Every structure is written in C-alpha cells, then in structure tokens.
Length: 176
Image 1 (cartoon, rainbow, N blue to C red):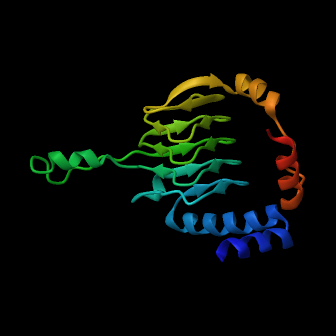
Image 2 (tube, one colour):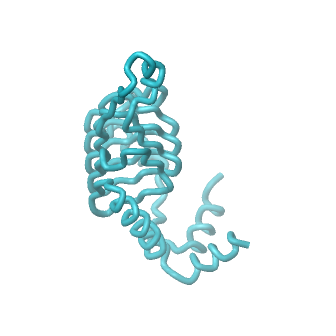
Image 3 (cartoon, rainbow, N blue to C red):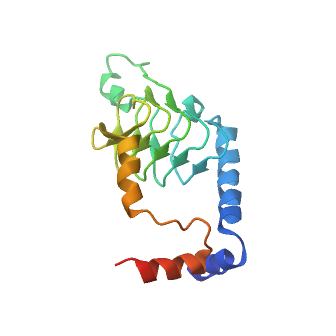
C-alpha cells in the first residue's frame, strides 16, 4: 500500500523536489541535535549516536542508509571497575563533496577528506585522504577519484534529467 502511494507521489511531483523536502526535514532535525551540516547534502536514515554534536558534515555530502557515526569508545566498559568515570570521545568530520555508502561505520577521531568515497559496508577507523576511495573492514584506500571516474564513465548512463517512467523504460530497454 505504502509503495503504491510512494510511486503515485513520484509520478505527480518532481523527484528532486520530493527528495529535497525529505532531506531538508531530516537535516533540520539533526541540526537541532547539534550535527553541523553544510549545504546541498543528502542524509538517509543514518545513526548519529549519543554525541551528535561532535559530528561535522561539509557541503555536497551524501550519507547512505544505515550509516553509523560512533563518537565514543564503548570498549572502555571493561575498564569501568578500575576507572569508574572513564569515557573516550572523538570528533568526526566529513569534508565537502563526499559519498558515504550504506551500512558504513565511521569511528571516532576520523576525518574524511574532500572528494572521497566510502564504499558500502566499510568500517572507517582512520582518516581518509582527499580524492580517494576506501573500502573494507577496516577501510583501506583502494583507488583514487581519477581512476574511479575513468572506470565509471565506461558504463555510465545519463538519466538524471528523466522522470520515473522515462528512467524505468530506458533502463529496462538498455540494461542486459
């Protein structure tokens, strides 16, 4: 039922307009919690943990579904008998023009450099250099943005101008 309503909405209004409303509402709620968010971002249903005010997201950043931002080290639990008041925290910074893939985990004290991609399912435990792509557990650099661009252009489809129906037809007609 919800799926049918969703597709009716998509057919009636521009997809970008609908997405913009959803993302803007999510951003406003996150900003109230203290997350610093730049302009032109897309944030899915990510989890910002117990210290969202330690997270900063630059401009033109996409954060995929189920991404988790972890700003503290919960492992200190095992030290609490010896150090009852211990806690360890760290900031997380995502610089401009980054893409964080679904189900990724960003650990404390991590900075993701400009123009970078975090592959889906990665666990980022250290800084990501600008213009790079990281993947894995723990995440490691697998290539740079220039190499990625060269590879992806070989299989690219230019569908961003199409509405839902046009895109569906194009993909069904052109993908093997």
